[in-house]
Length: 72
Image (cartoon, rainbow, N blue to C red; front, side, top):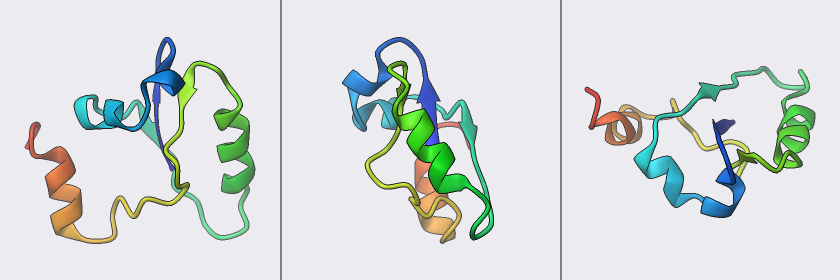
């Protein structure tokens, strides 16, 4: 689950994530409450949540490095 905090982030949409580093990342095991947490955060007006809950942040090295190229 990826998210970025700030004023009106929900309105700025997914493109905002391409320009800003994440504020935090939630990692959880199966059946540990991450879906509930995702829904609670999605309901907050100042928190942008991506369309999909699980974005595969660590699923492969190429995807991971492409998102962090600006800071590596």
